[in-house]
Image 1 (cartoon, rainbow, N blue to C red):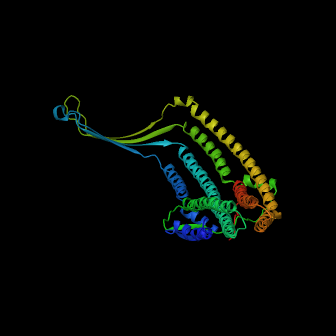
Image 2 (spheres, rainbow, N blue to C red):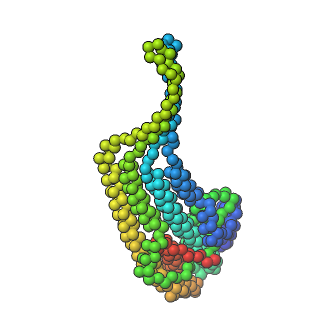
Amino acid sequence: MQNPLFMKNNILILIVFLPLIVEAQLKKNISFDQYIEQVQQKNIAYAAEKLNISIADANITSAKIFLDPSLSVEYAYNDDHRMQMGQGISAELSKTFSVGKRKVKIDFANKEKERDLALLEDYFRNLRAEASITYLEAIKQEKLYEVQLKSYYSISELAKGDSIRFVLGKITAVDALQSRIEADIIYNELLQAQSELYHAYAALYIPMGQFNADTLYVPIGSLNMRKRIWDLLPLLSQSLENRSDLVASLKEVELAQKALKLAKREKNIDFDVALGYNYNTEVRNELAPAPKFQGLTLSVSIPLKFSNFNKGSVSIGNLQARQAENHYEQAQLEIKTEVSQNYHAYQSFCKQVENFTKGILEEAKAGLDGKIYSYQRGENSLLEVLDARRTYNNVQSTYIETLFQCALSLIEIEKSVGIWDIKVEP
């Protein structure tokens, strides 16, 4: 027979030994606002996305550049040593002029920056929501761990009492053994819950853009959030006004229109203007003597744009503009559908939470307490107590999961509408 102090020693092991698993890490509480601020300031992927704005600024600067002039210098010897035909030197300064193209390129680059700004805002919209869910996931795992811890403590106390009752001859050895086995099973479940808890804690590192080997961040707060009262139609209207990805899609339409305009401007004729100067020394050849002289030349070169008969680039621009408009309409449809789905999901989870608060938890706890009391008086079997314990644990765990899903659906609906007032109360 196992010593009746066995289960008590197990509890001491749980309290003393398990924290040593992470003794090298200092637990540091972090509030929801502090966490989101860290995410905004230090998230590595977000920092990389910000560089797109700097790249867009560089593109604007590049688009403002004027075409460079060209300078050519030519020297002619003309066999002056033998035939005395003289020498000559000439220089020419030329420049290509593109009518109307530079302004369109600048407008195109500015529109690209506007799109990138909208995409950056949308990236943070999604990042903030994902980070919030990660934070709430850690709180959820902590609550589930507490359920397992209380369950283990309760069954351990029951097993300890059964060991004493067996010694006193009040119950059989089978009942005492069964309670010890059940405590060991729940202990393993507790270890698993602890592993999942620290896994959730560690997941906070990535959104925060840092890893501290000696610090474990612990979120503080509750899964209970203030219930929001909304009507679906105003939410649909708000989403079309607020969604940054829809703004980005609209900027893509405008960008495609600018690209079409640029394709048309590319068909404008570029012409070259050149100013030349030449100097020739005296020709002393007896057959064709000539004095030294200087000359100026002005020339204009205009290409014959037979390629303008090819309308391929303009046709591509028209098709891309129509394609961007279709994508914008599709984005509107998807946003409306997403808002509608999230709205109904939130309403459903709110009702489920309310159903739990109407007495399910209290009834399950009262049922368990009653079974334990009757078992201690010898009025029912250990199996009934264990069934009641599992039922109570399941009810608690389901309630925590429902609270989490309700909070998650609140985040999803606010993300889909493009609003944000999420608060996690301590």
